[in-house]
Amino acid sequence: MFVSHDKPNRSPLILGEVLFDCFPDGKQVLGGAPFNVAWNLQGLGFEPTMVSAIGDDAEGKTVLSAMSDWGMRQDQIQTCDEKPTGAVKVTIDNGEPKYDILQDRAWDFVQPPSIDNYDSYSYLYYGSLAYRSPQTAETIRRVINESQLPRFVDLNLRPPWFEESWVPTLVDGADWLKLNHEELQKLTGISCETRENVQKAVEKFRNVHKVANFCITSGSKGAYLATEDGAGIEIAVTKPDPLVDTVGAGDAFASVLLAGLIAGRPLRQVGEAASRFAGKVCQNNGATCRDKSFYENVLP
Image (tube, rainbow, N blue to C red; front, side):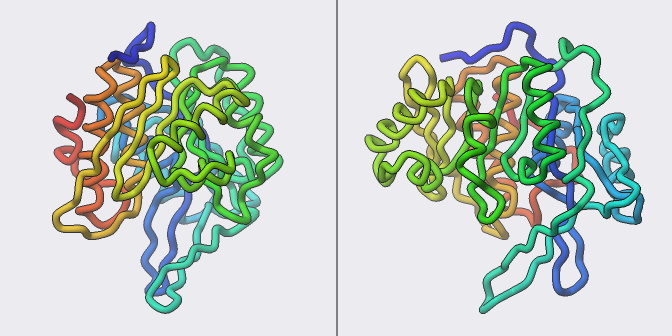
């Protein structure tokens, strides 16, 4: 099965947060799911346009410097003079990390991008976290309406930064929706421990929200791609050896899936490539890599 776009190899538009994970030892790691996806897509050769906001601070300058070094476009990165660059305070409690996504940050105030014509873009990608603030939520709604681009939406039911009332605006009519089986279960009320029930939950959700295609991830059980023609593709997990950390595995999977959709590659091959790349990312520290060779020969 092929999933193609009528104008392949066009730049994806990525909208959402850029932030730093700040650890107790003072280490700061650049990330945010949309930024991770954009970074990976740049490594894969797809030249994304990232729409976000940074503060007029040292961290904001670090973001721009990293993007420049990686060859990423910066023309839609806004500077919010009165708000600091995004940050997540990471603490360790009984050996387990906890994440406090700090409020009132620059990416909560993203204005509509200065794009007059969206014809040169292939997909619009965004996640649900960026919808937490009124200003960025308004920008997401506006870009959805003005661009009319196929949408790849990554739902993350991360309390307290998610409300079920957001779902229709975020996902209705989307081309692809990515979420895990636990999130699908919460949204549909159907236990998603078996593939049969996942299929039932997908159909229930699709009937309400008219989402065309689904990517359902299930950790060590792999992923399931449910397409609008009723087909389902099982994707086995690629076990990392060695396992270093799982940070960014979902973003890695989404990056390769989106790249394959833009390029019009066979969907099963793309899903398997996405699994391999997610496993590869788990063999590294962090969600992304600054070595160009890391991204070679990822797509089939």
